[in-house]
Image (cartoon, rainbow, N blue to C red):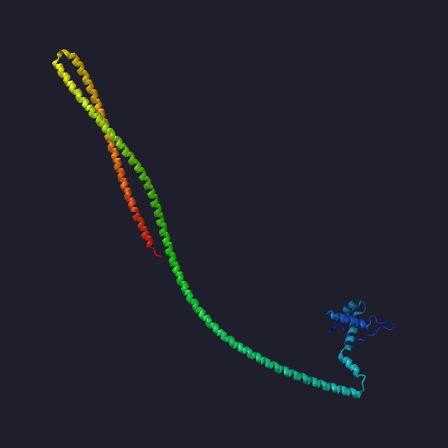
Amino acid sequence: MNVSPCVDTADLEIRPPLGRPPEVPDAAVLEAGQRLLAAGRAVTGYALRSAIGVGNPRRLVAVWERLRASNTPEARAEASLADLPPSLVEVVQRTLSECDDHIRRVILQIHRQAEASERHRYQQEFDRLAEREARAAEELRDAAEAVAQADAAAATLQQQVTVQQERISTLSHRHAALEASLAIVEQERAGLRAEVAALQAQLGSMRETAQKAAQAAAVAEAGREAAMSEAALLRSALDATTQRAHAAVEGQLRATEAAATAQGALTAAHAEIDRLRKECGLAIARAEALAARASSAEANRDAAEARLAEFATRLAAAPGRKARRNKVRSGAPG
């Protein structure tokens, strides 16, 4: 029930002024207060004035309190009892007292039954909770055993993981060592390839040089044979000229009458002999030069053949190195 503050209605008598009608009817005040209660608002003097539109707030709230007090069941009962005779009022009061006692006993019995029901329900709930607690404790023990087993399995797995990690580390080191060895082998292979390419180029150059030396030797040999043939012809001509000169000298000795002619022929013969000697010397020099060139060509050919033999030896040694590398690679740890 909403009570307006700061208003004492116990000794307040609400009466309209003499000769003036009330400003607001009681029915309007009661209706405005019920509207305020239905709207969930507190019934105050100013709220009633705002709802009605006119009136003194203090009077309006006093009228509301009076109307609310007159509408309670106790007030209505007292108003109805006041109209009865005294004997009936006593009977009604005694009956009301007996009814109150009966109602109290019924309420007490209902309370006791409700309390017993609540106790029974509480006992059932307690038993159910105890059973659930026991079941939870059993499940907790099972969970603890499962956790212990899981911890043991986890420890075993951790040991296996540690062993695998150590093995992986060892394999990683081996792999790094193998990669380093492979890099060294690849470097050696690249060096050998470059060396083989250089040797092949050198072999081609040496083959060309040997071919040229062989051609030069053949040319020198042909020149030497030609020079020897020319020298033999010159020696034959020199021998024939010498014989002719001797025959001419002997004919000069035998024929003095042909001395002048013989002297001229002898001088011409000596000139021819000198010329032939010079040509023979030149031919011999040319033959010696050709022989020197032939010797140099043979030396170059011998050097080329020696270098070819050395290159063949190195090429023969190369598969041995590759076999050693293959052996090292096949012998590497897996």
